[in-house]
Length: 497
Image: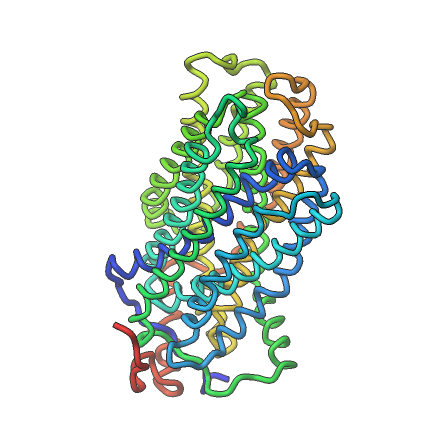
């Protein structure tokens, strides 16, 4: 009810320290997501020796659990009453389990049958995703609570995505340069099983550390955040609220758009290692350069998307990013099929590919930031309609979209590899050109289909720009002055300084 719902937060401008602390936690998700989307299929398919389609199916099956788990976590986070607010208890509690479970994912029991290893992959993937949800869903919900300012939200979420990509790609850079470096025994270091063990220990430690740094660094903001109603609704009403919240038109449009765009990114990153290894015939030393190119694209996107948003508005900026990303990502691959790309080993090939990779990433990351910032604006629109703030549930849906990178994207990647008869234990330079051409054509075709769907759906996003958003906040502030207190007007919650 409107009389018990937390009021909308103020249009606060946050300090750099708060933005950095908020953003650094996404290093954990970046490491997990890049590990899933770039390495996991290759590891379980080419190193462990499982069929690619079955690996993809196991990972996607784990995603089905997220469709139920994430909204429940979001709901209980929305309604949690504690001296540390609604979000931080979840953030603290998730730190250690995430590290331990991620370590187990990359160390499956040896000597097991295919079915047993697939069962291990499925079970641990479910647990890893559940644990990461216990951090990411409440942490993501902090963004619209920290500030209601239209452009400040894009800045705050920009830091989140910047750290997420820097953490994930930085870990890949370290992995390809050190853990999976080429050796006489493994000329393509990305096929070295021992390197994945070393990777898992370092990645697990960094994930736990990043989460604790973010939780501690944003702890002092608890006093400014909206707080839950004193009474938690019964279980039946809980699921009714979840279904009602997720039926919001603006949310559904962003949700469907996100599924399409994140699935495209999942396809790209899962198959990028295959293309770099078997199409362009690069060793792991070049994969280091590829990772740097991605990081350059992320850094450029951080500033580019803020400029684009201010000049065009969030919706138009997002539409342009959705349209341009697949064109650039597909161009060099289709060029190889048409025999217009430079031959492998020529000097021009590497800089050309890396330049196009960085440019594609600018627009791919731009889509992610814009969708997240638009999702934050949906929170107030829903509050104006229902009288309640449910950031946790909305951002659970947003987080589920992101998981499509390593869910649907990996499933489709595995299915494509099986459909074109890509060999297990393949040797770079000896994969049939017809197989590689089929892989490219199917991949690019799916990218085009998902992009067209995303453009069609996103073009119908109903919320206006900054002026409409400000009017909505003014109406909510007026309503709040006659009902629930503004955040911070009650006695302060004890905090750790």
